[in-house]
Image (cartoon, rainbow, N blue to C red):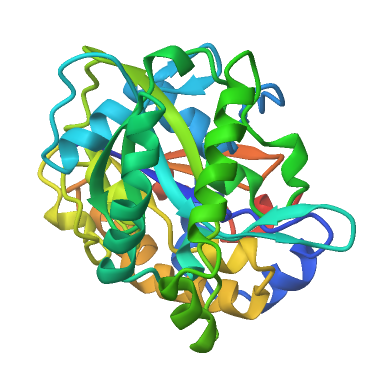
Length: 340
């Protein structure tokens, strides 16, 4: 192996909390990787793309970004062993929306705890309604379905993580097909309302599944090369994008045999929930599982280069460190580059 790119969404703390969080963070290997870098640059963040900065970067790296949409559906389908012979397909997630004081919110999918039995029951209930609307619906797993909607190819969608915690009105699908989407969405919402699945979930203190979220539209034949992609602590659809839909543990750096892009989603749930104690805990775990092994691999020559791609909603930082740059012993290890 010569190079590894570690994609770490929400590894940059929010500006207002960054000084306090960095003081509490004990990550000497990360500090060394950050401080003894060969290059450091702020990557542009395009406010017009309806995705988080790391999602836009990953789609670009995989050749899956078109007109601001992340055309990932076909690649994720292949990860689930599903064929995409023709047409335009979307990724579809069963979702929970709720009314805040003045607006709608969508819940983080990581917190839904949707079982296979419940996911399959809701899928089978909704499928005839999709069929009647001319939309083919396929099952990937409880939280990841796929919809063929050729006449919705122009639907402008957002990634679910980009919308979490924000006014949902700004992130809902838009464009000419949006009216047809809302009609189908309303039918499915009424269908699932007070369904036994949701009655059982609410009795257990879980959020009701009361909507669905489409995104990632891709036309048939839009082949992507995801052979370099690996994931850790990832949602099943992310792991499927990398070719293994069953979520895997953190990938040890020395187990990757070729140049790789590693998407590590360990920090996202805590960051989206503003659980900064949990964020610190996960950062400390990554120090042992990812940063220290990467630094050791650089120092003993198993790696020639490590690229760190750190982000939050409005900032994206790319740092590259090499075995040679790690010899700059006079650079004191510090986490200051995580500051705004």
